[in-house]
Structures are given as C-alpha cells and as structure tokens.
Image: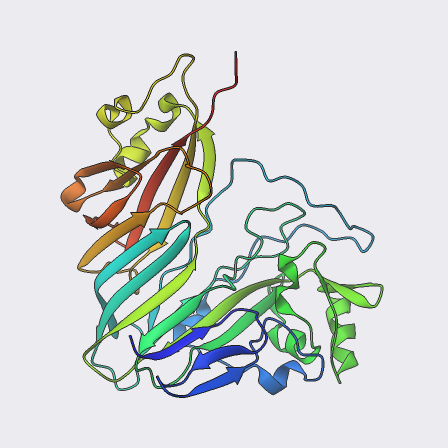
Length: 366
C-alpha cells in the first residue's frame, strides 16, 4: 500500500511518509516539547457537525491527592475490554465499508478495510472514548491508543490528531493547550504533567475549577479526555485504510461451566458440544478466557465481508494450546486450535467482531 502512514502516538519526532519517496518529521501532540507551546504544533481538527453533540464524559475520574504517589500493583487476571471505537465518515454517511481483513498476531491487531465513496472531500473520523486517571494499577491506562498507526491509500494528507478535555461538563481543551499541559498525563501514575506556557492565568483558571492541583514543580491532572483523529481520503471510488494497534481484550479465569452461557452462544457461537471437546483433567481445569472486541465498520454499518487470521506469537518456550471460538457466516460456529487463516467470519450489525481465546492454566501439584 502506498500513501500516508503515520504513527500518531506520543513519540516525539516520529517519521511520516508523505509519499513513497519523501519523508518528513513531526512532533506529535502527546509528548510536550519544552521549547514550544501547545498551540505551535497541535493542529485543530475540523470536526463533523455531530462532534459538537457528542456525549460528554459523565463519570468522574478517581480523586487524586497531591501527596498520593502509590506503587504499581499487580493487575488481577480479570479485566474489562477497551476496544478501539469504530470509524465514522465525514461528511456523515458518505464513506461505505466494503470488505475487511482482520489479523491478530500475538495481541497485535491489523484491520485492513476497503472503503468506497462519492464525496468531494471524503474523510474518516475516529472518536476515542472519554477517560480519566483510573488509579494505580488500573488495567489499560493508555486508552487513547498511542501506538495506533493509520495507513490510507494515496491520501491527500496525514491524519489530523487532536484531543478534547473536560472537567465535569465544561470543555477545557483550549485551556489545557494554552497552559502547555500534557493531556495524556491521566495515563500515568501519578498523573503528573509539567507546564510550558506563556499564559499562567490558564493554570490559575484550571486550578480554580479543580482540573489540576499543584504537586511540587508539576501539576496533577484531574480532567477527562478523549482522542480525535481525522483521516483524509483520496477522491476515488475505492481505496483501502489500514489500522494497526495493540489489542486491549477482556480477560478472566473461568471453568467450562462458567463459559457455557447464552450470551456467548450468541456473540461467539460457542456450543455445549464444542466445550465438551476441550481437554478435561481431574478436578476440572481452569481457563484463561480472553475476549477480543474488534471494530470493522463505518457509521455503525458492517462491511460486506470480513475475514480473520489469528497467529500465535513466537516465544522462547512452547505455550499451552489455545482454543479459538468465533461466529462464521450465518452464525455457523467456528472452533479451532491455535490459529485461523483467512477464515470468513460474521460480525454484528454494527460491524463488531468478537473472538474468544481459551488457554488452559497449569494445575497446582497435588
């Protein structure tokens, strides 16, 4: 695939392919350059009309005290999934999903999507979910997917990367930018950020509404934020867009009886017969259940076809076998061991693909 390919995460000085022959260097917004204020290098995204009406954060982040510096704790085996949201077209309903190839290799997701459009200036939008600091040891603190890369065929320009920040119901995006604060300090423990600003009044204003708290020479971030990416497309009938990122699946330790549920039968096409084929050991084995949720659609519409490839990661030791469960066309159950190769799968009405991976856990010695 030729065209733009950009790592739109927080690595300073990321290289961006402008054309197959030309490269340029950019300073992504998520890591602040001490010598430049936010406004100097963070382009504003022209949002679609529906963005102005997007749901604002309603859940407050955990309270952060200035004296609180907790050590990292071991994450429990059970955690909820944090999927990358689905794409939206700009203008609305002008870009249609055609076919999609999904690959999952050692926890790395690649979504290769063919799209069609007749719009004069087509683009895709990715609205991240709002989140705040989740506390020490929170699962998946980097919910803005800093590692995400986007590749669009012969795109007219690079993805435009921006953020929105809120404190309660108040939009404080401009204040955070002018104060020179790192919006993604909320992904760290403690959520500290330095200030690089010629507008100290902004720091005072943020402090007055409880969005920051002084902590030594730095500030504790108490806001919620989300990432917004606009992906310009070429004015052609069909092209491909590829998203690459690390999966953030749900995980839990379960027994076979806990896995046999009506909800899983609907979403992952698990059947009692397929569960009976799993290895059985004395005392009943426990399984690490990993649920992947992968978006493949646009504007809540699924592609015409989706294929899935799953490849186990290579490692120094031979891992336990993994058993994979996913829905095939017309709800046909697919249950295979270790890998899938270009398997035709079924997604739900919004284009969401759900995959269950089971790995048997070692039993304690008697």
